[in-house]
Length: 120
Image (cartoon, rainbow, N blue to C red; front, side):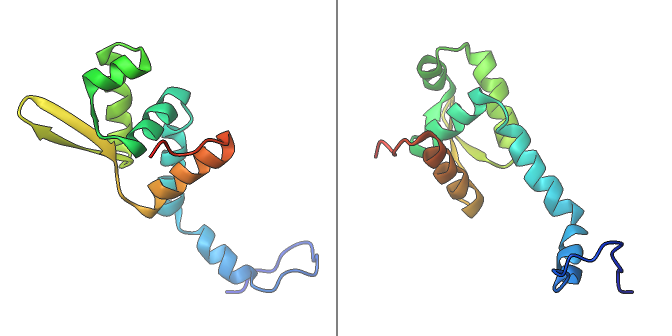
């Protein structure tokens, strides 16, 4: 069934393909979840740190000047959204950013917006 728009603006070519893309609710929900996680400045700072270094909660807490429980809360949110991963070594858990195109894009976006460069 072809959609007929109430107003014609002369740019309707390809609208069916665009409308079809809009029906992919699951993908839009994934993007919204990522942006929701990064709507918190502390999580953006932790994400950016973990783009460059794999770190444990204790060190992240010291760098961020926050308590370990507060950092752990943010790490849990980032991990649940798939933006970071963890690995256990003995009693210590280390966190780093997931190696995905989305995370690389977010890293670049943060640096472009803030006009900062990677420390590496």
